[in-house]
Length: 290
Image 1: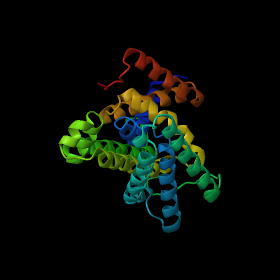
Image 2 (image 1 turned 135 degrees about the vertical axis):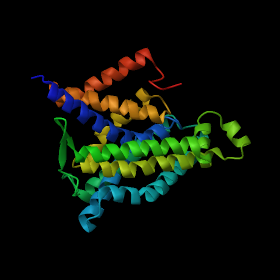
Image 3 (image 1 turned 45 degrees about the horizontal axis):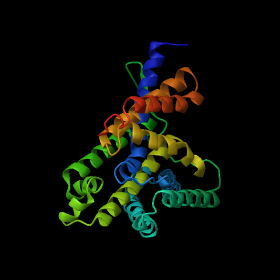
Image 4 (image 1 turned 90 degrees about the vertical axis):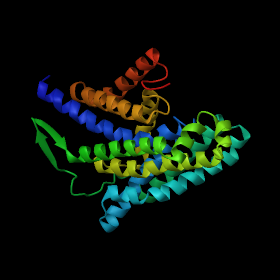
């Protein structure tokens, strides 16, 4: 039954969910949106970050979000290694289109199976002081379980936006997606710049995974729920637009929340992708694409 209170709660919940979706999509927005590398294994790195947070939380009682931040250098190095293997095996030979896609699918499969063998298929969750708490504002319930990931997601978006726009390496990452010849004239190595960008994109997965496991328990196959969402948000926001990623994530979150509230959760994702297709029919470059 429709009510204005129910609508307000659904919209607020959708905005908070959208902030989290932005955090999850930043890595693929950087790797796919700017580097044009279809890294379909990105959700598996997010789940790996979630399990890292789980292990540190269950063993030492560490806050999952602080764990996610602490593990970003590890994930950065992991991402740099993965890109170097990808470059040496496929991109350097000009075979990155189909074979590179198979390469990332293989990583996705190996990571999912490895996590299943190590942790099983039981749902894993973490404990933190803000999980399970909420407050009411003007009749709208706000859960800290969603508010904290949303705030962190917005902060991640702002940090990446400033990094790309205000630092040398950030500008080089933007340039490598547009004109590699000009980048070489500036004295920068495109392969090195791509390695840095790929590492940053995978590092973002560490924190995104920590945010994910604070919202809901995870299993190794949870990555399948986010493959479509990541690419949908990146394309809808505009390829390479970090601000567009945040806007598209909030749009998707609000739509999913409204559909889940009034029509049932089974319709939410289907309608979201329907709106994506409709938006692309009107503006193929996405909302903020060039």
